[in-house]
Structure formats: C-alpha cells, structure tokens
Image (cartoon, rainbow, N blue to C red; front, top):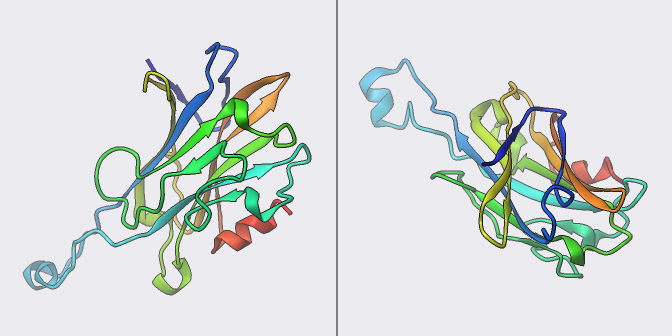
Length: 203
C-alpha cells in the first residue's frame, strides 16, 4: 500500500525498499470545472467547459550545493533524456485530461552521477501570462512514485493547498542522504512564469 504524504514530510526511498533502482515518478492534474452564469447560450458557445491548460513537468538535476550547473541537467519537453540516461521524460501532455499520470519521469537511481545530489520536480503552466492562467484553474494535482520493477505505488503526495494566483509548483524532490535516496513533499507555489525563470532559482 502506498504511503500518503503531507506537505513538508520526508521519507526514505531506498533504505525502506532494498534493491530499489528503477522508479517512475508520475505527475498528474485535472482542469478545474468552470461554471458560468450564462445559461443555455453560454454553454452552447463554450461557457461552463474546462479550460485548455498546458502544464509541463520538468526535473532539475542539482549538485551538492543545490545548483544547476549544466543546461543538459534540465529535463523537460525540449530535452527528454539526461546525458547519463538516468532520467527520461515521457513527453508533453497538452491538456491534463483523463485519469492517471499526465506526465511521467523514469529514473534509474543507481545510474545518477555522483555529482548529482537532488532531483527537483516542478510543474509550470505553459504561456501562462498570455493565456491568463494560474493553478487556481487546476485541481487534483499529485506526485507519486512507483517501483519500476513491479509497478507498485510506493508514495503519493496530493497537492491540496490553494494555489490560486500561482503559476509554478515545486512539487517534490528526491535527494541523497547518508548514501540513500529520500523523497520530500514540497508543494510550494511560486509566481515564476516560465521554465527559464524557475531555473534562475537554482543558478
């Protein structure tokens, strides 16, 4: 049975799961159902529908000082695979519609280079300024970690805070600690409006 975490909680990954190497980090979200007072005509011409929101999941591979030292260590829809092959992105999901994970990151823990100490998982809204969108339009956001060997869910963190007005979520991170890997549920909303702005936090 998966362990459900609350914001700020930390948990062992490898220490409590000996032999764990391949994991799938699933991230998901749904557009919040929008209501309109326009009645029949409004619904006929699009009112009351869910907005088309393009959320993008990314991974920052950071060194011991919490810095992103190479652009190749940013894994996102424009760079789906780390040079070492330890982190692979499933590709872009443009709407967030449907059940289950919207985007997945495949991580092989024992292949992560020794100079990388943290994998930070973030989700931002593409073109949020022009589209006038924020995470108040998103519901049911989560991150989960699945054992790649048997596909059993190990950890789930549901992001239940009110993120209205926020355009980026720092969802969680996997990090080294005393030779083992741990996971931290972060759930921090920011006003970064693009991936390049997020990256500046870690330069």
